[in-house]
Image (tube, rainbow, N blue to C red; front, side):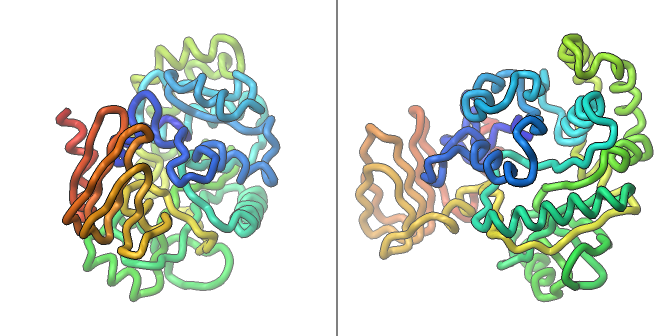
Length: 340
């Protein structure tokens, strides 16, 4: 899934080049490139499908030149993750009637790729044999995080276990209780299932969406697929796969994984994974920091900045756009950008 705009990372991530196509961490690879290479030992390149906004098709092929054009599916507009996954599933079924499917965002960080591949491989084996299972990868929490949804289980043990419930992003006090209880894991947004399981779930929980896609079933995998999607996609309900399917299903499973995961969805998460100077600042670009501590400073190449008297703040300059705010208030960035 590579169609988002990453507005919480404004001004680095914008409509013309969103987060998944950026090398925010300075690794030499964009997020989408790193995601592709992370899955290659598990999934051959010919079996990848990227769903993105039509405006980003050329960018996807630039970052992933191993893919053919028909492996990049274009949404004519954003309709959240359930329509995105439904579209990809119908396309996959036109090529393979008994697929096991891994669904992943294009813009996550994983530091232990070998462990990631082991977890994904075991999960795919599980859903291949337990055909009705819908599986999501849980992450062992390291802190009381308010920026992630949570997965609750009845019993904590090694391996794959049933999910008791999904919890929305909590406030800080609730997140602390989740951490102390030990039965809650971060929801990574990475899903594994068989094509049978996800199609049956769509039929049970989002039947109107199934009816919309069924109208063009013979067209998937043909040169008429895109025209059909362009006509039908806007009629899909704007709903996430979590709300639309996972929270309503009775065959949900998870595994508590620990492979150095972060969605790097906010400046705060970037700060956690970036290198810090002696005052605890994460600075990129030509900037002089004076009496400044615990801050993120990201200055575009070709510009200079002096930052004085800041504590736990964010200063970012990119494409003639400037953001200055408290790191504690970064969850508001998305709403502020909408006012521009």
